Image (cartoon, rainbow, N blue to C red; front, side, top):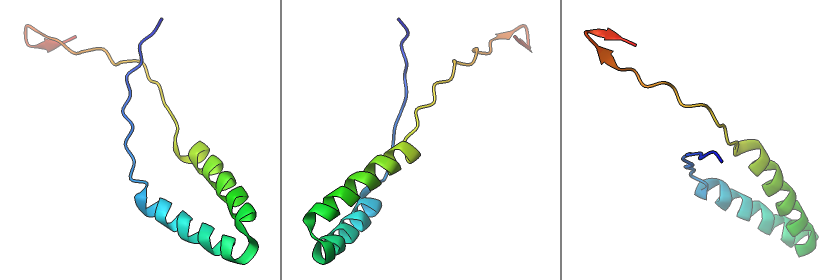
Length: 70
């Protein structure tokens, strides 16, 4: 079994606020069902687009031996 360490950081609040505003406008114009369907599609697409997990092998650690690198 392999252990994988990764760090995920994101600032989603401004984008989420914009999505809420658009969703509210769609709900006011076309109804809540259409707004929910739109929001689900947007969130699925954006999560697939922006969140990618990249697993890379660890780089070998360089050690100083008698003034040289190995």
